[in-house]
Amino acid sequence: MIVDSGFAPLAAGVFAGAVLGFVARRQHFCTMAAFERHWYAGDSSGLRTWGTAVLSAIVLTEILVRLALFDPADSFYTTVSFGWTGAILGGLAFGFGMALVGTCGFGALVRLGGGSLRGLIVVLVLGLSALAAQRGVIGLGRIAIVDDAAFDLARLGAPDQTLPGLVQGLTGLDLRLPVVAAVCLALALWIGRDAVFRRDVGRIATGIVVGAVIAFGWAATSAIAEASFQPVRIESASFVVPPGELILHAITYTGALPSYGVGVTLGVVLGAAIAAMLRREVRWEACDDARELSRHLLGAVLMGVGGVFSLGCTIGQGISAASLLTISAPVVFVSIAIGARLGLAYILEGSIRHAFTPAERFPAE
Image (cartoon, rainbow, N blue to C red; front, side):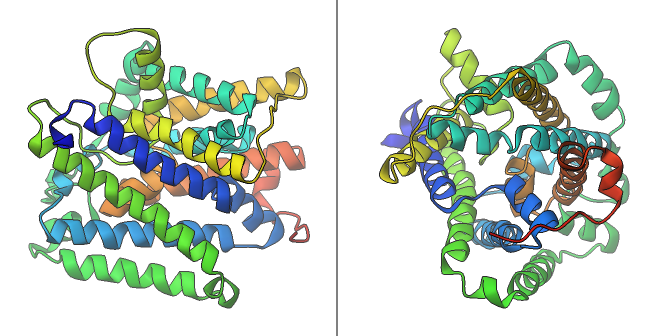
């Protein structure tokens, strides 16, 4: 059986990543672009596509939980210790870095699939920076700033850091299903408010597929872990530490086999490359000058370090953790949005102070 193989997590990850990369490249699914169009063009369709992905991921993940195919407690996102300082500071750093680069780590992989050498630079620097923040000297600062300042939600009686868990801790009642239903209803109402988006079948389908890939990750790694004789990390899509792990696997052999996350990272590039080839969009792209290169390098460092501090990125926290209804997900995502707004104000408007005034609107294309 495939789940008995030590390469099963890698294979499942490549499959999931290929679907994710293909859809993202084909339908231009990008959180940074969604922010930019919302602020500068008054077009919220990209954010609503992201909201659809979150809604799809929540619903499908909850189905897995009800069928006992996945236990949220197995994910590191749901630990009872909430690193609020990392969620805020890491999110701000990640968002600012994302603005400098023009996309997140996931977007850089999608660009790489189309031949972007800028994407390659970003992925390499992001991955190395993430490793430095996770295991290197920067990790010492992370321990002091994030780990030592984390809030233990057990003090509130919560069994984990999910919204249903927090409600249970405060009320003493298991209200998971009503809480999940309320969140899904609120998301659905916000998504459906835009009549134009309601008719955009392509974007709606994109969101549903992205959410399904996230749920697939929980199901696949859970099934493999249950059947495997080796420890398997229960995870879904995230693009901060996995690119760093991919670099380690490429340059050294320790006997450890690639994880699901490494497979997803490879798969995204593969899927994006297939989509780019089908549309004849494959072309080599490099930075125009040293200034652009320096901006990409700095942005990648901020995303790598910030992503480790916040335990995720626009996909890792924004959708994967959100599918579990963790309280960290909205905190990180809002922090990323604020950081991105500051970064865009600096790049496009000349100063971060413009982030505190209404953005100049440009006509939507």
